[in-house]
Length: 78
Image 1 (cartoon, rainbow, N blue to C red):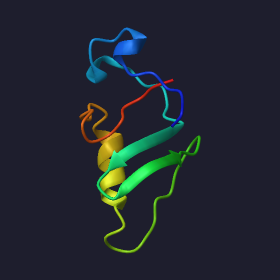
Image 2: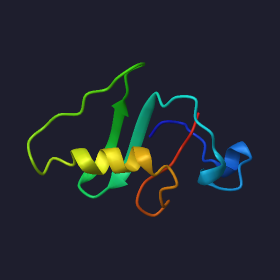
Image 3: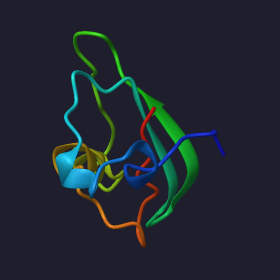
């Protein structure tokens, strides 16, 4: 697992207080059927493609809702 810190370790009260300039990558410790995965994002655009049922919408939901639960995904920030 990468050596990242949580929002609280960076001095934020919770994940909702973190302001992002840009996301470089997302590390998924455990979420549904995904474990120990890193999704690297492009500087300007990232294309997420795949067959039905391959969790594309779930990945977009995690990006859109950065206040994710620590019990379902490891929210860590640089």
